[in-house]
Image 1 (tube, rainbow, N blue to C red):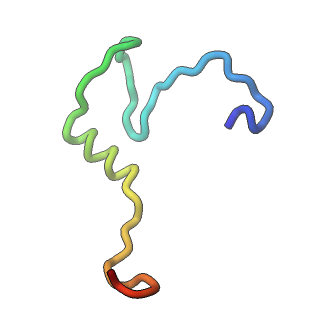
Image 2 (image 1 turned 60 degrees about the vertical axis):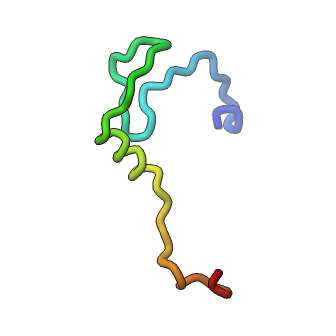
Length: 60
């Protein structure tokens, strides 16, 4: 994305993944997400679902 507009990236730091902020998580460390965080990630990335049988063409 940066290259497309002529920018060079020297350093990149992730501070957020979707609705989850990394906060004070030390570099190179990880933690398990909570059930609420999992739910938020699923909701943030869930594609809109089309009701069955309403699409074009023959039903499968």
